[in-house]
Image 1 (cartoon, helix red, strand yellow):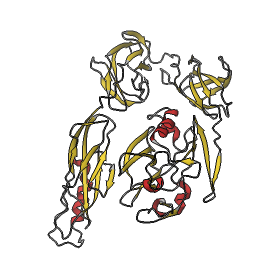
Image 2 (tube, helix red, strand yellow; image 1 turned 90 degrees about the vertical axis):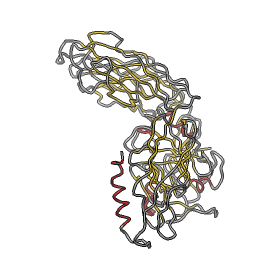
Image 3 (cartoon, helix red, strand yellow; image 1 turned 120 degrees about the vertical axis):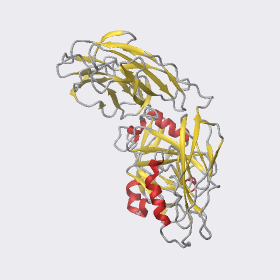
Image 4 (spheres, one colour; image 1 turned 90 degrees about the horizontal axis):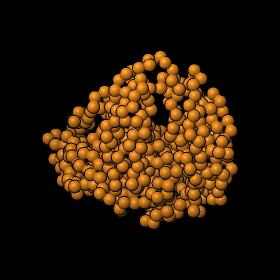
Length: 512
């Protein structure tokens, strides 16, 4: 387990050899912490107290930095100069929490403190329903060797679900895919012919509740992998069928697969009639942009998958309705305070800036002050980065030292800092926590263009540029932490966690 920290252990030993104003017989600091409550749930934050850490034996030593890794994955989740912090675990699990400390002489703890924290799901949140099989039905035979397994499960609170998928030739199938995001799954390679397979699904919600389905079975065909079969039915429409208040630039998405593993093309049907007209043939993508749509109009669309042998399979006809376009959301506006022009866009019932805020005077060190001057950070203290990625702001400065959700703060007049509720509304509009990230990030299909602008941590270091994006909300946990929204360049999801208000993050504003 401690192998993950070999690098840091070596670094700590190296630091011990550096003269830093201490006598030669110094001992490094020793990390230690307690936590409460001991019976943690996903509903409440856990308080970690590292005040019992030993600062070391040098003259006038004291600890200046506490680094926390809440999953023992080698990534510091929080870096703080406070010995006590709170952290809310999002899912039930057994977590290994790691602490490293550094004293004012630059010495780092050689051995990191590690404790196990068991987190259970909140009893106020119900578990998903037991997964039920859709295809192939239990006990079916002559199933194609590259089937699209399909099932259904619902969550009583409407939470987004993830799935662990088990598949194999024994009655106790092995895990082949963890935290799968949709209720369909196609194996990466054809299955064996004339073979009985067993499979099951575990449904998991965002609070860590999970429900295991029964073990189902099916038997593959013996027709030979060379025999061509029609494509599988197109699935997973986005937006979900019957969705309303969709934007006038809506891009539709779907998923397609083929039992032989063939590359597919598509026929795209799209229009305002229940039997929509053909728009594209030999279409190679799985997203389609029809251009600017008409407000308050229902659109119908259907996809036909075509394999290289001309075999076809039609999907269902899906539909969505555009919004009324009466939000008075400008496509762009100018901030009169510094004459900077921002783009904006309507998403459902909200109007958001689609660029990061950049307003105020850059400071290179220290914390902003409540001095009637807006103070910002630019990544790596380079003002050109503010022009490219927007500025980074500490939470209190952003809020202008108030504690009211959806306050105007440092946003231009007529705009405000989004609350947790407004962020959730945006994320749900683009498919929920597990899929919205790829659509909201820069280059995605939404037009929101969330930038991976990094952050400035409480140690005055910058990190994460072009790798991660952190956005503040106006929702706070307590006097020291507030909710941030996190985008990761390698992941499709949107993630929420509470962060020390001393971090400096990006800001998007919402129209009043």
